[in-house]
Length: 382
Image (tube, rainbow, N blue to C red; front, side):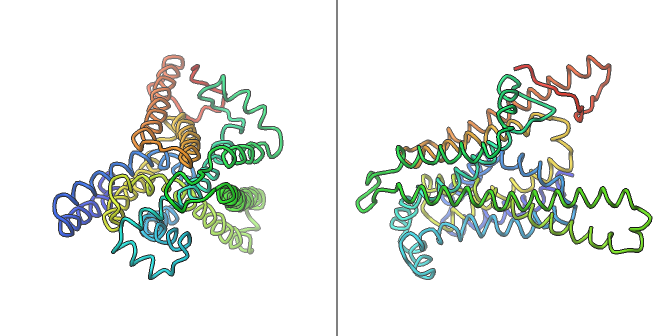
């Protein structure tokens, strides 16, 4: 099971490390290895959240996520995205931007750093909306009940998540936008932060809304099929349901890719603290992204989220923390170790809470393996 799920990740790791040695010896080997570990530590919460979405998709779309999706993640976000950001922010053509990345690493890093406020505002708002929508939803199973119960009541207010996100964006733009503190030539970024943040919010609403719409349509179609099972055997309902599954899966896949892009922002920016070589950066972050994808599929196939029911909660709290950190980094520098540890601690805490819950249920019900799908409201008691 492990080899089947992580086989491609192991292969890419070996090829990437060999390529690093051939490019610049053992120094490059160490840089790529460090970047891989950095990406995995920063994106573990991404894997948990992705697994919660991916388990709703068919085996075919899970394969698409591991093949086409990984190409987008590795080459799109870890290689092409930084170059595109430089091209847009510096008003350069794509060829000029690539030439700059390969031949003038210092200037390239300077331009990416200057574009960081817009990147952080976009990604921060997208991730913040994911966190807010999660904590404002009334769930049967609650982890930190003393927080989640009152927030679930507040969540009954329409559009509360979007209102809070816009307030956070306004405060961020007014108080955290840099004012010529990065280097000569960097101007007031208030307008840039506002526009980028609104773009992140709109992206979430559009992609998330389409995904939810088609998912609801899919559920309605399945209910109709159960009610009219005999008529659907020869008529077009079965065909239309398959087409609907395709639409639903496509937009869920699109949502996953935008989600992964938002998670990758901090890794791409943080990588410049280690190297400004675009090739080594792509190798290291790409290897890390492969493991994150494989870990996502592993969690789905093992049913880990069903057995450890608070993991998804911990991952979403980590998303909220990452969103806050991204917005703070618009003005202030935050060490990547801090960013990674916050997510790891929250997920480890939620995992341990899940273990304690399972043991408590086993003791109460006299079962060795209690069902994690208990529909009654359960809280960790924390």
